[in-house]
Length: 382
Image 1 (spheres, rainbow, N blue to C red):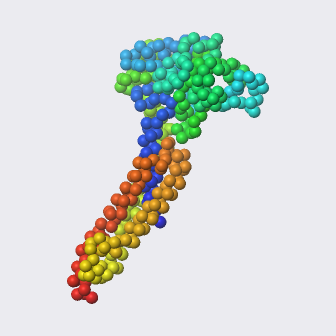
Image 2: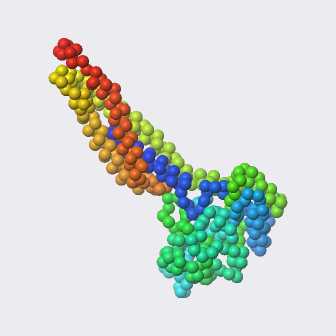
């Protein structure tokens, strides 16, 4: 049982480490691996409202694009995906639906209002159609959807381009682009549908600028703050990297990984102590037998097999049982650590290698004692 528990803990810790490694370099539907800055600019606090906000949003984006080293800039209303939760759910109906009651809802995707340039700035790949332009205002109702939404309502992303659906308020919108799927509320969530509406159609005072650059984040943050204050000295600005704001989202995975790693190390230590104790006790009880075997011509291999065979059998059975239990625990780990799976060949190989190393390490001293038995001394004592 001790060895099986050790194998479970070793399996769990390796699964968690591999899952965390994938989550840090995972595909969230946006790219945080390069310098992507999030600039929180609350226009309401600076006195903007109504029709003045869209023009200010456009000026802010155009100003960001003038900063040396900036590659793309865009804007998303309220909060970006995964930051402080997901966008609000939107009731979507098929174009031919006239009765907009809950029973006729075709989908309830996450909804985001984004500006032209947002997809490039966020690193979200456009799979079909086109991205937004500044002409996509209230007079041109357009929408971009993710692959999940396109497949659910229209069968494929190619069939979705140019098609229409309606919102709860009967607004009829046309799909002009399909973007890749992403993570919106949690990195462990199942794939969810999402739609992206032009921010010009429903401007918000709470918005985030997404600025992608190859410059140092600290230098870029200073340049962004300076440029925005040139536009409006009273505009409150809060700047951080996208990856930094995702620390909260990745916190459960990090805690689970560290905890399971510590438990795995403790389990390995306990297993070594247990195997060592069993092997040492077995050798001490059979010293005279081993001496007689050696006096009769037994080889070193035969002596080790007689002295430590039982311990190695327990190690093999316990490791196999622990590895099986670790695989069965995959669903629990997957709900905590993103992309955690013990079916990973590297995890399985690592667990087998770890348990193979624990056996020789724990039995090294008892094995040396068994091989150092002097038959003449033992027989003389007898």
